[in-house]
Image 1 (cartoon, rainbow, N blue to C red):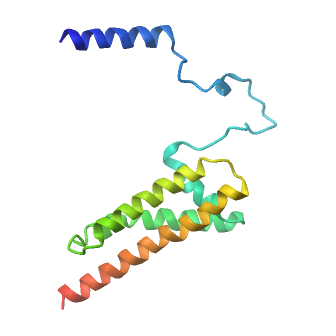
Image 2 (cartoon, helix red, strand yellow; image 1 turned 30 degrees about the horizontal axis):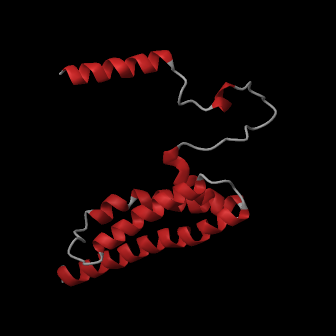
Image 3 (cartoon, helix red, strand yellow; image 1 turned 60 degrees about the horizontal axis):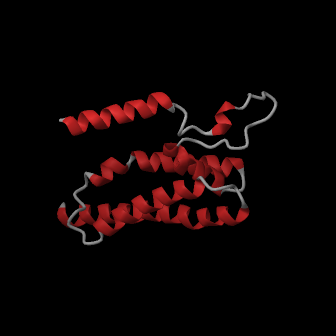
Length: 147
């Protein structure tokens, strides 16, 4: 118990003494209504969607990709409930989905240079390919075990 109390006291002292130690110094600059801040970036949980927006050359194309991403992501629980665990590829495909989504968010946090945006042209088709493969597995599962 003394170890926990000591740790709590040290952490409390650090947080009270240095409240801004993990803050971005850019947050303390004065706001300018006429220009956007240079370091503007969405929160970490919106970064994959931001990557989908940035991956297309046109604004409408990015918006359509982002809406498709959200719609397909919302259908994910239905596909997971499909008892696809007996497929040997399921674990690998689930890992592929997680890595694709996390990597898309990571690449979206980079600067918007043309070199960095080319990574998104490989990640976005991999994301949609995952849903296509899962859909085919669900249809195969339905035809094999329900007839």
